[in-house]
Length: 221
Image (cartoon, rainbow, N blue to C red; front, side, top):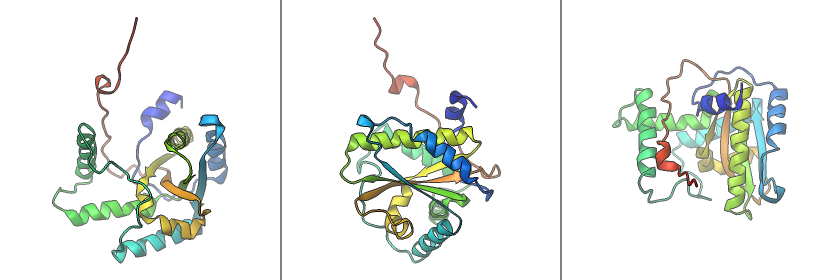
């Protein structure tokens, strides 16, 4: 698989089979991803990979919180600006509507939408979950570096025939994640990432992209 195919075939998969992912494949991907660029070579990311019993325990604990209606943990960062302006608001709304439509969930069915959201904390059935942390003293540039690292992981997973889904949703239950992975106190959880082989029976909508004219400007002499 070449780079272009990896980029165009990558998507947020929200349905995985339980087929195990070999440890050596994950090590190969994460070893190569460590070559991701970062300013001054800080490599600000800290990564934990869970499978088997530890992942099952995390899913169990989180499911108990969800079932009990427990509120999420206090926010360490905002997922989106509180007043999301145009055109970003419309893009987010469109992506959500397409996803729920593909699942056959009508707008007014709040319970079904809540169940779809709760699937995040089962990792959509994935057998592997990655959790990416960053030191709280790092700034926005280092968060950008970590984004490049995560994207590199996702593209390398595609080269291995695997799929993924990055999930800021895990930050909602960051304390439960910390109970299982025991990160140092100075780290903050950026996101989780579900990893595995896609369940091809799961319905999905492939999100479109804005026309280049909306996001790209050429200045030529």
